[in-house]
Length: 156
Image 1 (cartoon, rainbow, N blue to C red):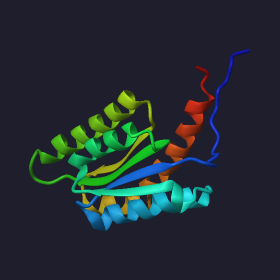
Image 2: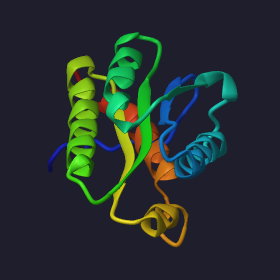
Image 3: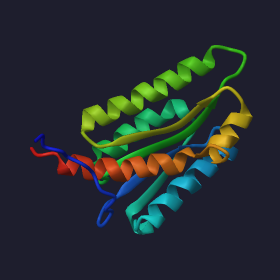
Image 4: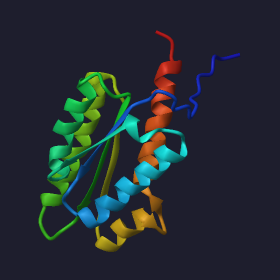
């Protein structure tokens, strides 16, 4: 029989950092609210949550890396919204944000969750920030809680 390692959703004593982009704040504010609601519902006290605002999605990776490398947090969430426009700017920003957050996780060993919406329209962003398609901030928070516990369950 194989060894099976699974996570839990225990949050006692965990500390989380959430960095949220100010760009498209009418969307990112909703993502932040979703993440905070999720954490509170799962027993994370406000004293275990630090929220850091940064200018835009492109700046998220540097902030995430600094937070993850500080040794103060069990997981870091990056929340933002990149909405496609008429120029290739979207691809550059979205790609760099995704790569940077992933690189921060690999460099530090701290779960760094990518809660950045990459959408074609404002309507799609609204749907993913708390209406038809749920709230991706909530989902990023759930993934952070699960990843903290999963990494602790893996031996070594």
